[in-house]
Each structure stands twice: as C-alpha cells, then as structure tokens.
Image (tube, rainbow, N blue to C red):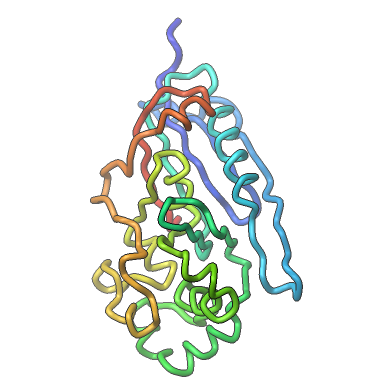
Length: 237
C-alpha cells in the first residue's frame, strides 16, 4: 500500500511546539502529534526571556520529521503564538527569538503608550505597547545598540519557522497586526511605523491569501527526511 498523502500542521504555541500530520483529503489525523517543550531562558531581572535559536530549530525540524515519517507529505502549514518576536541579520542569521512572555520592553512600551497610545490603538487595535514589536525594537536600540544595528529582519515566531524551512521568512497581514506592525483596518503596514522608529524594510513579504510561503529547502528536507514541498503560514494564529 502506498504511503498516505498528508499535510503537516505545525503550531509554535505558548507552552510547546507541536507538529501533526493529517490526511490531505479528509483532514483526519494520521497518528499522534509530535510535541517538543520549549526550554526558555530567563535573563537577569526576570522580565526578559528568549529561546536558544539552535535548540528551537532542532526541535522544529525533529517534530516535522517525526510527524511526517512514512507519509507522502505534500505541504506544511505553520501557526504560532501571538506576540512572539524573531530578529535576524542581513544574512538571515537569527539574533533573537522571544516568546510572548518576553516583557523586556516594559518601559519602552509605557513611553509608546504615553506618546502614541491613542493612534497606536486606533491603527492596530492593541495596547499596552510593551507586548509589541515597536517597543521591543526600542529596547534593543537602547540596551543592545550593537545588536540593534545588525537587525535586518523582524518577524513572528511563525515567520521564523517559515524561514527555517524555506530559507526566507513570510508573514500574514494578521500576524503583522499581532506584532503591532499592521493596520487592522487595511491589513497593510501601519503608517505609524516611521513614527515608532520601525523601518518598513525590516518586515517580511506577505504572500497572497492561500499562496505558499515557499518550498522546503534541501537542507530542511534532509533534516526532516521529507521531500521538498510547499510551506504556508498563518503565523498570527
């Protein structure tokens, strides 16, 4: 009997990473989910937290490979916790992976709220600012300026997972909004970006709804044991 045609759903949740295969026609689950807990690093002071990029990358690839073992996988879809942040340099190397519980930008968020709170809320539907990317980037500029100068790409954790599998990040309009970067009324980057100190060129591309974000790289295919296939994102999920 030929292997079942399958798709894999990946969820970078708040407490663990999960990958599960589903029948490509009926969407019935094919086996149990592959679950990988998150080793979280708490930085001095307790507010700042991050994931180790190499560890999260290995867990992502292992979970996808386990979920797809013995199956004919045609696509991988990715969703991720709201509020997570990934920063990368111009070569695509990960500089920082922060969960939605990373509260390093408390003071920068308070300053954003005081100066731009009503306009920020009207555009994004969100407050307080400390949870969102503009405030977090302000923290990096004020506290880690050398690293801040290397930031060439900002994404969600879902966008980072897409980059891990395809070589380049991609987002949805909903994901950008959940990072405080897109206007909830228009689904395009908010006009406040420059005012908030965010260069629009840092944002990943947003494929059309339903369009693939990319294809599995040879390196990712080798690490997971899967054939090259399309990868899609719903990174605001």
